[in-house]
Image (cartoon, rainbow, N blue to C red):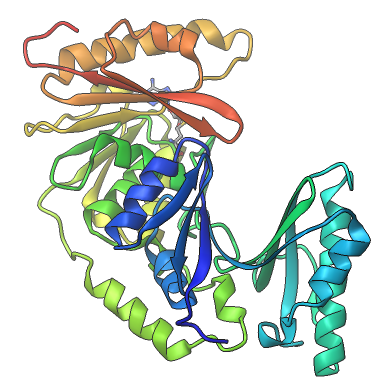
Length: 384
Ligand SMILES: C[S@@+](CC[C@H](N)C(=O)[O-])C[C@H]1O[C@@H](n2cnc3c(N)ncnc32)[C@H](O)[C@@H]1O
């Protein structure tokens, strides 16, 4: 397999994140050929895929297109997949996992489609190499993605394997954590680059503060992980991978003049956040406190404040939360003059209780929930 040959690479992301992913990919020097809601496409090699897996903050999977074809049913799917030279990519000792997304009247469940693809690949490798790879749901080794839309199929090698949002630092999740890639996209939307203070009350398990620390230190999130799908592919170049990791690591800073402030009223949340920050190797630049958001220490130098309050719809909680959102408005007004404040929430009725005028309202999705990332400019001397 030629790691330097140009392929079609598709990088997937959560809904609402594609513009930030595009910026990241362009900053790395690639030309984006097309963008949709949840993916961008570039022409680049598997060697480039290594770099993308190591460095991207907002992408979820880096996929390499292997084959596309028209397909009317499961038998045709099998025939098309078995005719691909899988023996050039997969050795029988590897474990194989198939991920399918199916939207076609030809079949009514993606499990059956995955089964067909798995059978075809295993049969082909077995015929050419004399033994069969094991397979199952575990995404730790070779991962193949199938997208089947009406009468068209696309087969991809998933060079990430596990989602890139699984950075590996969040050993203790705490309640309702944000996906790491979403936190990185929110930070990108604020323009945060580490040159300004960042304050994160209601930090929960610390995802926003930790992603901010990684950005500020220019530390590639992929360096926190050792396993990627592409490492299990036949012909994977270990030396090139080590050299790339070294090159990417050399670009990161050791220290920061500023510290990120993260607080939460729940001691257990702060303990989890500290532990996670330690695992990510950024605990030394985050200052943690257990306190009400309103008592969060605010630095002299002006910067950014981000809160991700609960937005539960459960009966009985609504009234408390209304008070909390109103309190956030007062906190911004009274304690954060000169800062830009942000609230990430999935509950617009509660957001109205903040009582301040927004300067931007960006749409993101937290899993399936449509959310808003609300921006408030707290001018010195302004009352909102
Ligand atoms: C939705 S979670 C934040 C999740 C976080 N973004 C993450 O990725 O883990 C909301 C957090 O707000 C905290 N919280 C609730 N009321 C608070 C208050 N009055 N002051 C400070 N923190 C509070 C909760 O303890 C919880 O950890």
